[in-house]
Length: 474
Image 1: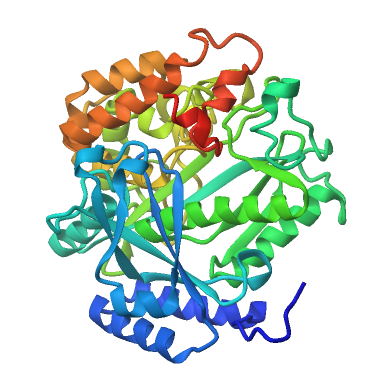
Image 2: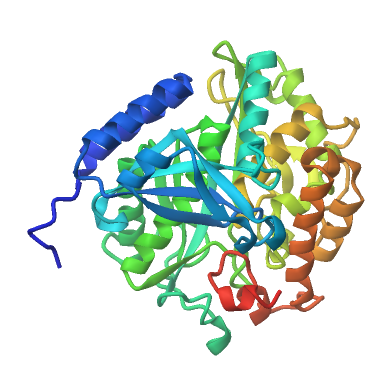
């Protein structure tokens, strides 16, 4: 119920889109951080109708955390935003718990008041250790540094776009209530292209697309997916950190909209057996001086030698990084060849069972698509794994058509991840160990063999399901 005495900021969707696209362009144009910081602080100071700033960061598993700071407090204390890291799974121990948030003024968003509340703006942040250095467990900070280093050293701009699939189920918090019935209920059984205008799935997709558009996503297309009650909402390419941030916002928007409709947006990779699962196909390319380095009109599949070396390195380390791309017990149900699942460690322009697909492209759109990614993976870990492996990993020839397969269970993926020297190079010994421990804890609370139906523990102990009581028992 609105209060006529309140005077909090509420903007139309067209006004929001204009502001967010301007901020996105500043980010793309690499406007100096100090310039943006000064501009944003002046805006927050002068815009009296803003009451709070939602500061966002992600933990080691990719779970999004949000803290609302009073606007006036933040303007005066933005350089000393401390929080207790020991309360975040995978972060610091209690004896060394003090961490700070450093606001990334580049990643600033205006959000629709009808879903995020009036008088609020959103901004991503990086996690800083107590000595002022970047915190090792903050994969977003690690990815941003890697992208900046590549630009400084080689002029490379790392680009990505993700096709994030999800399911829409009946009821609020359907995942938390899964143990009561042992099943999820579809809101629509029409399937690909067959959701009628005005039904719940189509209404949900329309509302999410409207919010995304307002937040500067630059939408491309949206539609129901192959499985019943499944959706996918596509948006444009961006630099790698922006792309990962947008995955976090995409899932947040979907959950907000679904909850407002009395439904649940689920990003479990395979919540229902017998139908296609949820993927997060990750399209990547690299540009330098405005030129797409993956394009070669005379190359194999019109890809350059540079791009094929990138692909070959990913195939070389396919098993090493599988746990980074498929982060949960449930994710290994999705790697089922009967449902177009990419479980083969090879590259192909046509075979959708390949880990890497080469889409049809041109000079502007030429890219490679890493298909073996689950939507519950940490997007910053996914991007760092793909780009650093593609650019710096070891290269073994002859793997593009080889008969090799990704693990079909989390235990084998864990063993590969732990044994690989490359994953130590990617993340460092400490972060690698902490991540492996989190995955081991999840696996040990689930059935060792997946079987033919989804079991309660793989849903209840899934890192994206909000259940603090269960997490504390890990």
